Every structure is written in C-alpha cells, then in structure tokens.
Length: 204
Image 1 (cartoon, rainbow, N blue to C red):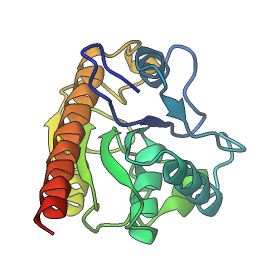
Image 2 (cartoon, rainbow, N blue to C red):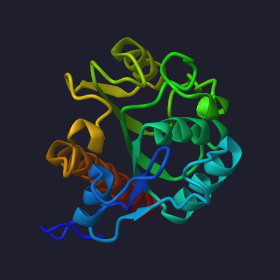
Image 3 (tube, rainbow, N blue to C red):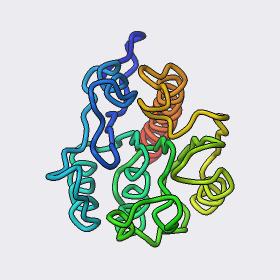
Image 4 (cartoon, one colour):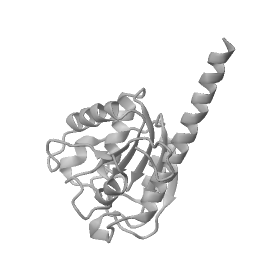
C-alpha cells in the first residue's frame, strides 16, 4: 500500500463489531479510502463466538504483516483478546473506537457477554482508544480504564453516541486522520529499524 507521497504504508485491517459494518458505516468508508485495505471476515456477524472471532482475526493479522488494526465496538474487545493470547503477532498499531463493555450487563446484551472478561493487560503495540461521553455501550470512565490498562492513548470524542451510523457517523475524517498518523508513526519506526539493521550489518 502506497500513500500519495510515495511512502509505503502498513496494511490497514478493518475489525468490525457485532453485525459487521454496513455500507454507510465509517469503517466501510475508511476501507474505501485506503487502497489495499482489507477487513476481517467472520462466519456469522450476528451470532458471535469469542474463540472463532479471535482465531479469524489472528489468521488475518498474521497474513497482513505489520497491519494497522482499525476496530469498532466488539471488535476492540476481540483485538484485546487476540493480543493477550498472541502477543508476538506482527501488528504495528491499532485504532480502537467505542469499545463495548461486555463485562457490564447494563451496557451490553447477553449474547456478547461471553466475550468477557476483557483482558486488562498492556497491548504489545501502540494503540489509541476513542470513546464518547454518552455511548450506550460503555461509560467514558470505563473506556478510560481500558485505555489505561492497555497503555493506549485516549481521545474523548464528546457526546457522539456509539460512533456509528445510528449516531450520525458516515465518512469520519477524524478517524481517517488518526489512521494516517498511525501509518506515519509505523513507517518512521520501520525506517529507524532498517537503518539500525544496515548499520549493524556494516559494522560486522
């Protein structure tokens, strides 16, 4: 994947939540905005199973080496479970938007409660959590708690609901901007490592 300025970008991997992301969802718009971006394809978006969803994401992430994950809602929880089980996967970074609090009976339906407890260990890749102050599926305090546990940066998006189509989100320019920032950071880190490797090779 190559940006307009010719810089080679890391693969973008879309990780939808419950129900997938329909045609109007910001994840779908974002996927179209980044040439070469792909999305995880679960067998059943409406009847999620933790083990199957994690394994599917794991296989896809392993193929998309150095991917930048762009997850929404339940997809954020799947990313956390994958990272807890497979910390050595070649993931460059993650944007985690409106994580669903599957540990809370008040905020999430029973059929996704099996995705709890949410792993509360540092993620092995740089991450940014974006959350809303009036999300029906998680409180802003809980979202901050998850970000702190994951050692992720946190963005308070204000009163914007679940950051989905129902709350008025189609194409999301701010989200695309964050992904571009993550891509630039990943490219800079990759360049630093390549320069270090060439230096080490020349020293031998």
